[in-house]
Length: 133
Length: 133
DNA sequence: CAGTATCCTGCAGGATACTG
DNA sequence: CAGTATCCTGCAGGATACTG
Image (cartoon, rainbow over all chains, first blue to last red; front, side, top):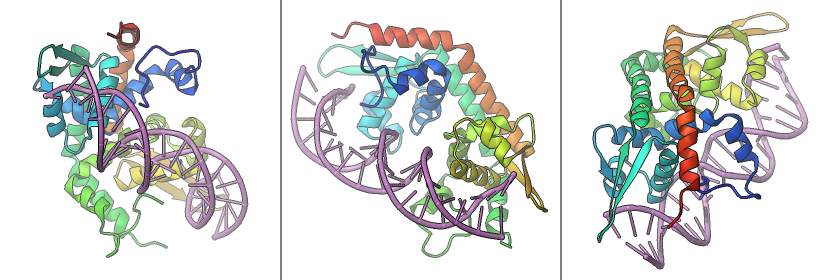
């Protein structure tokens, strides 16, 4: 487990904690824009989903990474984990209002990028084929 | 060099190229939201900057990573590299119009997060101090 | 079903030295 | 000044096995 999930003990007040205290929004931004954070928020935009439903929607994510991602997003208050007791267990994940806003801003960014992909691809082609002096 | 900077040769048509062709906006998003991409775009929002000016503004970035980041952003058409010949060399970097738009959307996301940091910190505290059954 | 625990590896990215 | 080239290491994250 690389993400702290419990109260820091004396020994765990290390570089990470200092960083998190110095610039806490930075770590949240990393959770949101990281490898799986954005895809997870995206998958939860429309539906409340269970763990294995999420696994299927977030293409390529491993159990471990999905679990870790969900913990981070839940800890930051972007996702709610709703566990219905019973057997088999039933756990549902959904966005908080803040999670929905964040995911909307992220979608704005992605939408902008998608609309301009022809420009980006043209720029890449120009870069890749320009004469190297 | 981990980022492709030249036309792919026969051997280099590997998993990366397939990925880049399958979902090209994804790689651009990674360049924008990656470790140094966002900070670099942010530093260039106001000013045109030279390489070493950028190094000083983007706190903690190494020469190698700044160089790599700028190449990726230039290739995607988000940043322009303007080299004035002479000695000593003078190279200026600035945003393209698309780079400015992208960086504005990214700033929207960061601003939202910053405004809600009290909520996030409260959520973290609740998560860290809740009783573990 | 909804996870956690372990082990392992590739590669992002830092440090250092060098160049036109 | 504006980079590139090499070498090296920590750790993100995958694979696998196990559990309440």
